[in-house]
Amino acid sequence: MLWIAAVLAGVTGVSGQSNKITTIHYGDRIEIDVLGSFEFDWRGGISPEGFLDGFDRVEEQVYALCKTEADVAAEVTRLYSRFLREPVVTVRIIDTSGRPNVFLTGGVRNPHRFRLARPASLQELLVLSGGLTELASGEITLFRRPDTSCDPASNGDRAPQTLRIKISDILAGDPAANPQVLTGDIVDVNEASPIYVIGGIARPGRQLFRSELTLSRAVAAAGGLDKNAVASRVVIYRREGGTGSIIEADLEKIASDPSIDVELKPYDVVDIGIRGRERRQFPPVVEGFGPAAVPREELPLRVID
Image 1 (tube, helix red, strand yellow):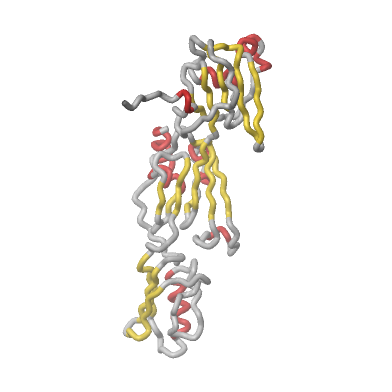
Image 2 (cartoon, one colour; image 1 turned 180 degrees about the horizontal axis):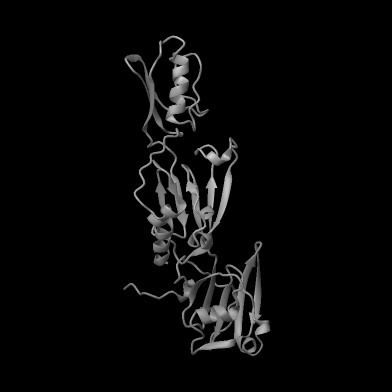
């Protein structure tokens, strides 16, 4: 899906944005400078409660979390004015390296963590991560913690948020599907659940589960039956709710009557019978996470001598 990266780049209009974030976050180092006075200058960070940590030049605490540099400068000016004549106060964020990272994982080519020093959109981060992989299921989940970011849309609500975004809406250019990613956000490009088709099949291995995926479609997607397959002897191994079940199917009967085709579910293992091989006594064990994942007994054998 490299083409999706190009499409995302076009939709996003990614450019070299340089507008710095001037809102104070956890992990920031702050500098207070008073014109003409070294005695009242200060440097430090933010306490867990959101105040300037260790700022003891005045009796009152100064709340700085999610405030702008100008907001904090105005508050410090007000407090200093009680004993200084017309103080000129400048507040600057001098170090943002301690801010919580953004994590982007799941169905992208190059999972990343990002440290944001300027605003960034979801689409921009997807492009920087190389775009989506074939494992992407079609939905993105964005989890936002209340204690790591400054969301202007929260209106003071410090509850965690979960946003669910459809990839189709991103590609369609829907602005609502391209939120600004904030410090500390966890973004997961949801991956599709797998099913496995093994045994007498041309290309045994993993497939991505899609809605309304049937047995006959999964067999076709795996290249069809091989010359040693027994079409009438198909076994589907299924696990649901911690219990296992076995479904028997006959591809010859399904070809004559599509209404009896079996609808597959995530993590089903479809075992096509092979001429001369007895039916398995136990469900096969599949391993691996790529498209070539196959049961242990069907992996290529290498002799070390």
